[in-house]
Length: 342
Ligand SMILES: [Zn+2]
Image 1: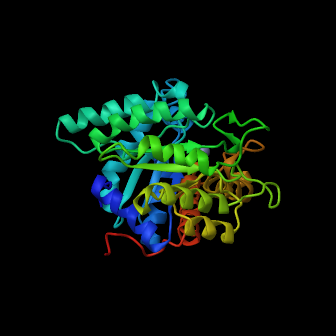
Image 2: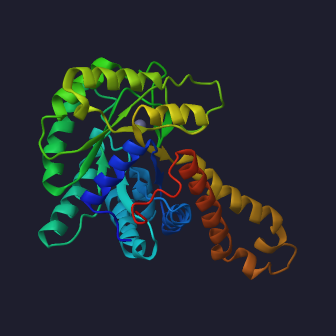
C-alpha cells in the first residue's frame, strides 16, 4: 500500500482506540531498518508507524553531512517508494524534537510537505512530534499552538509531550529531579489550548513514570492509572469527544499488563526503539561470533567473502528486527488488524 494519507491515518488511530489496541511506532535510521519494519508489519498483517529521530536523520544523511532533516527526507522517500509492495498501511512520523531543533528538523520537513502539496504530491510525513516537555507548560503549549495552526493546513498531525520521560534518548538526559508523572491539571490545560483549533488533530504523550532506554523490572514505577485520571478529567471538563489519543514513550521493559492497562486508557501509539535496536544488533553479534575466522583475515588467511559481505549480516539483522516488530504488534494487540484487509 502507499504510505497512509491523512484520512487513512485518522482511520487507523480511530480503529486502534475503538478496538483497544495500539500501533508500534518504530525508530529507523537506515534503509535496512525501515525495510525490517515493513517486513514485520506485513507479516503481522498490521498497519504501523515508522519514525525518524533527529539523531536518526543526521545518521541517515551520512557522517560527513549530518543534516537531520535531509536524512529524514531520504528515509521517507525510500518508504514512499517501497511501501507499495507491502499489503499494509504505514504512516511516517518524526520523533522527539526539542524547541531548539525545530528550525533544523521539523520546520524544514513541514516546508517540504507544503511544497509537495502545492505541486499536487502527497505529504512527506504524516505527523511530527514537538517535545516541549523540558519547558514550562505554558511555553510548551504556546509553541504547540503555533505548530498545530500550521500543521492543520497541510493535514499533518502533531504529537506533544507533557511531563518528562526519564532516561536518555539521542543524548538528551532527563534530570533526576524531572517530573516523571503528568497531572490531570497539565492535560486539562493541553485540551483548553489545543482542542479549539479546528480541523486539527494531535497526539499526547503524557508521561506516567516512563523511562527511555531499557531498565530492569522494578527500577521505575509506571503508573498507567495516571492516564485514566487525565482522561476522566478531560471528559468531565470538555465531553467525550475531548478524550485524548495517547502515546506511550519509554516503554522498553514494560510488562504486558502495564502495556494493556495503558492501551485500555487510550494509548494508540507506542514508541519502540531500544528493543528493536537490540534485536538488530543481536543477529549481527551472533553472525560475527559464529564466523569469527571468516569475517576477519587471521594468520595470513583471506577470510570468507560471503561472511564479511555486509549484506549477509544485515539481512540477518533485518530478519531479526522484523521478528521483534511482530512481537511488538502482538504485544499491542494489533496482529491481523490492517485496514487494508478490512
Ligand atoms: Zn518522550
